[in-house]
Image 1 (tube, rainbow, N blue to C red):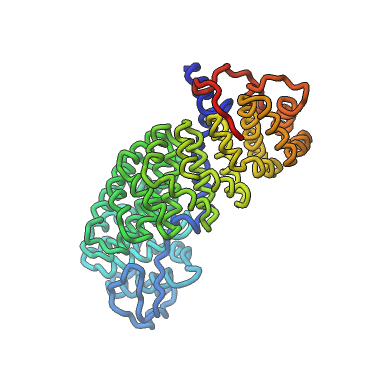
Image 2: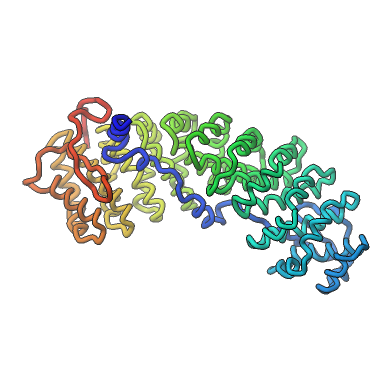
Length: 531
């Protein structure tokens, strides 16, 4: 077992474990919360924008127009009307409640909760003989559930989840659609309520709503709600429920609507953000060709989650990564993605490529053959820092596990100047990754011959790299100053050991240098090396 791990380290990235090369999205949940503008929203309010005398919702409200005087009810009057036994008063008060909760900039949700009206609104969901009342109550509860965790909890505590799941089968389309929306808001609150919704049987009923005749607004809500049921990692949703969704997601990826496509891709990105077994199930569902096709979509709200899902897939095994590499038009999309106007897409694209260059030499060659490296170097030179960090990983992984020719190609394309510029980055982890790249290049040059090694050392010195290395010896970070010192002693001092095969390995919290075997990582001898 230990021997296999050692061999894996030698093959993948000299001195760097596979887990360090291929990097899963450990902080995805936090990042997604920070990227709400790029991500789908966890909760959505149903806000009517028309005049009070003609209420219209995104759900195409079908109730008749109501006189504007109904909006003049005071809170005590609303409370009294909702708690009385007169169905007409119920309808009037609930409709006013819905309007207040859906129209005001800061809806007084807590006022309605503290007045004890939530259980009463939930009770109206079972009024099968009064569909308009069901609809108004469902809409009001949807907006209460769109609020804070405490406000959502008030809806759940009142027993709304089973009622909403039952309403998914309502013959009244607007009621069913509103129930989808409400369950999406509840599931979006977090893992506990998400699993409560799943356990109540929502997934099966939601899937049953998808037919060739399902209207676009309904499809949007279904896709969004299902994605919320696949969301969150601590803990993840029951995998069986995610698997049950995969056939419907495969169908949704052929929809024409951008919002449906976006939420479906987000759902797949959540499922693939985990163990390799989950990635494999997604691959087995046959969605990869559709995800690749959507990398070319004209709207970034579709491209972003499609790219994220594919990026998650290439964090898996070599075979799972190869599935993406082998997919026609997959790698061909990345030069454009790496120059996209949205910085987050550039970052995600660089992250995905870094996980491919952490793989086999044939996978690295595929990246080279698709002319992606020049785009990566451009990101390193001119991109925002988050994108630059990911681009550096591309080069470090390539020079760690690539052949001599592949490393030489990277240097020939101009990797050294941007690497040396990033050597003075404020982020210590990035500096260490840059130092890895520099060391890998020097090791490769030494394997080609002393003359090549000297030429690369002079190039680094002329570009100011040696000065930067010397300055790093004063760095506050222990790993950085020790690594910089050893790079100088190993590669730049005349009295340095003449053996160029020294490679770095990370043990505990410091970089050590160890002697590798005389053969290359792949068992091949020295090959032609041209810088």
